[in-house]
Image (cartoon, rainbow, N blue to C red; front, side, top):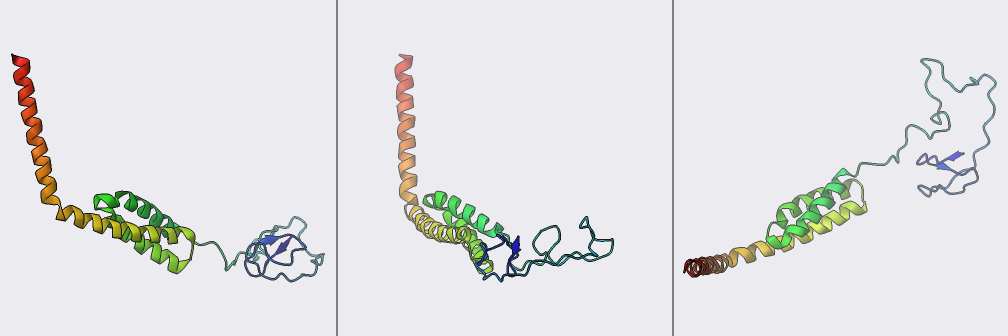
Length: 166
């Protein structure tokens, strides 16, 4: 096996380029047998581990270790729920945290989930604020319409009961 010196990825023995980070692989000379080596591969107690990580594993000090994507996932979830609730006028309440989480994750580690959550958060915030102002502007009309519908339902119920009693 051939390990990349940049990311520690395990590649085929004859690979010219790392399959994980596209780093140019240097053809390393085959390892020389060590007659003093422990045949089982175990290190004595108190000795540092071998440089290659031991037992065929990549090095322990991997600079390209995968980073957490928790804020990207949170941003995506908040953006989706914010889009669903945007027409009710409350999507901006979840859109703003989606924007914040997505921007922080994009700054740390650019990835698709954080970008999607960021975009959905922006859309949910814009549509949610427009819908909120629409509902506020038309609140009196909506309340009057509901009040009229309620009175008509009460009148129809009274008329129906009067017809049933006769």
